Length: 186
Image 1 (tube, helix red, strand yellow):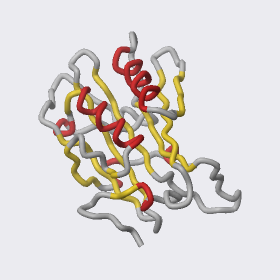
Image 2 (spheres, rainbow, N blue to C red):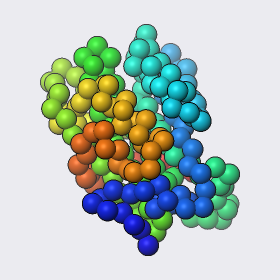
Image 3 (spheres, rainbow, N blue to C red):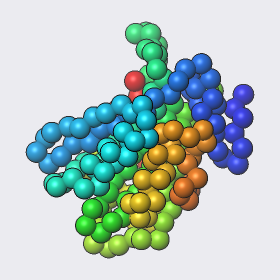
């Protein structure tokens, strides 16, 4: 049974969270086709990666992040399943705004999703939600918030016990609204 309180979940309440360590990882691409991926063991390493993303000298894709259970591999015949948690965010370096979408799969296999809430929406900035379908899935302007605030939320998501992270305001979102791509699973 999930021990969530007030629409928040502890890591132990997530799929595979009670029996495995959940390890954060991330990937983004640049406009030349290069890909930057990492798995994080410390907050220091994640902060360095976030510095790279927020100061990268070219255009970058949406950052895709996952909490993966260490050592877990689904059986080849198992039905598809989502990872315990996925966090996608996009950053506009010039304007200093960002937005994020969060997916949590609880221990019963039920998914829950949220979007950040902010008040920095701009008509001249588009932030992409789905890196695999950027023309289709963009963040609503009411999701825009300062990059520094998003950084705090990403670090909380990766290394703290409660999700969604308390560093930012979140609103519940529907699967249709967020549109998690196939890449969000194993």
